[in-house]
Amino acid sequence: MQIILYLIIGVAIGMSFPIQASLNVRLSVHAKTPLTASFIAFLSGLIILLILNLIIDPAGISTRIDFSYPLYVFIGGGIAGLSFNVINIVLFAKLGASMTTLLTITGQMIVGILIDHFGWFDVSPQIMSATRVLGGIVMIFAIFVAQFNKKNDMAVTSSSVKKQDGKFIWGIVGVLAGFLAPLQTAINGKLSVATGSFLGSAFISFFVGTVLLAVLLLITQRGIEIPRYDKHTQQRIPLWTYIGGVCSVLIVTGNIILLPVLGSILTVMIFLLGQMIMAILVDQFGLFSLQKRKIDARKIITIILMIIGIILVKF
Image (tube, rainbow, N blue to C red; front, side, top):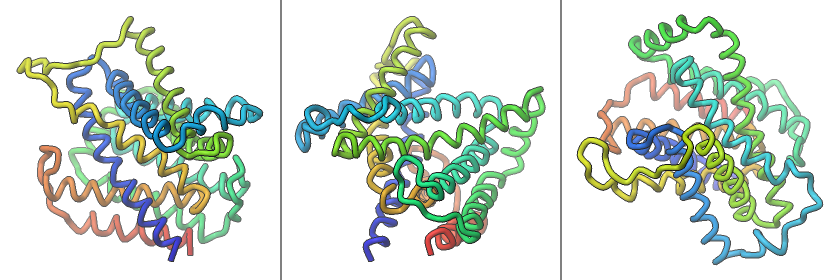
């Protein structure tokens, strides 16, 4: 019964992915660069985590930190998370949304299974069985079904890829980029042991990411400009546009909490299921002022395949 509760929590947290993406896309419209939108999301998440840590467990970011752990434990999660976000921005331009999603999730499945099998980063080992591998393959196929569904989308992706002489290299980069997401989760899990607090671990990860993003913006943009007004209407941007970091906090903290219980691969798969469910709801009801799209057979098949993949991995 307890494992079912964790699975439900994972799905609920995964549902915040499309919300975060919608907020960041909306903010990117007003910002000079996607890096600015990412910086704002990281900064807002950092402020939220600072407040939560000071109220709930201040020792987790001060006196209880065990600095005997290797340096990568403290900075690796933040670097991996930031790198994953930045590389995705590049890949979307090079390969298109569908191919980028498929390649990065393939990478996540591969590394998730390896982390569980070998017990990397002190994750409880879970032997790589045929059913676990099959479950990962079924999940990848489910993403394929979900992404490659519209002729227009495929045509755009195909044409954009053909223009790239190094599309094979970018494909490899896409898979390797997928490695970063489960690595971030595993490293942050180990960091939570070093701090004795999952909130402290999330705060340090966000702090590293925020600092690195600030440095990138100072190098590439010669400054950090937070957009406050709409470029066209000159009206003030709604405050809720800036709170994509709230979803980021849920995602990063949720990963840290669920990893020791579910393992790396199952945590990734549960979050993907939640993401797909929320994406369907966004389409069905036109949430966030997006165009309404009715639930069709393809979407139902995708959800069913995802659930089958999760059952194969866990049970």
